[in-house]
Length: 77
Image: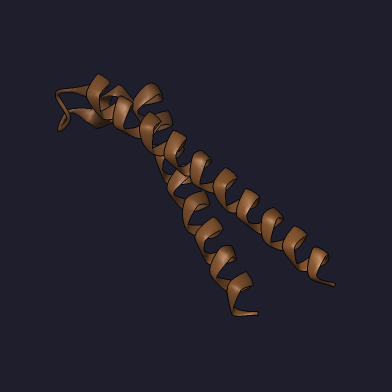
């Protein structure tokens, strides 16, 4: 079904966003030598934390939408 493919693609995109932000945040925390081009480390880390939170919220919303859709389909049967 196309709807399932779309939802799976949205979940994959949110997972990728979260993973990328986590990797960059971990790099900032463990490798201070590699962040010389970012004078505002705290600001950059805050952006990454917000990206992680947004990705988690997107994943939760998608899961709820899928659950609601499944419930609606079951009620129609």
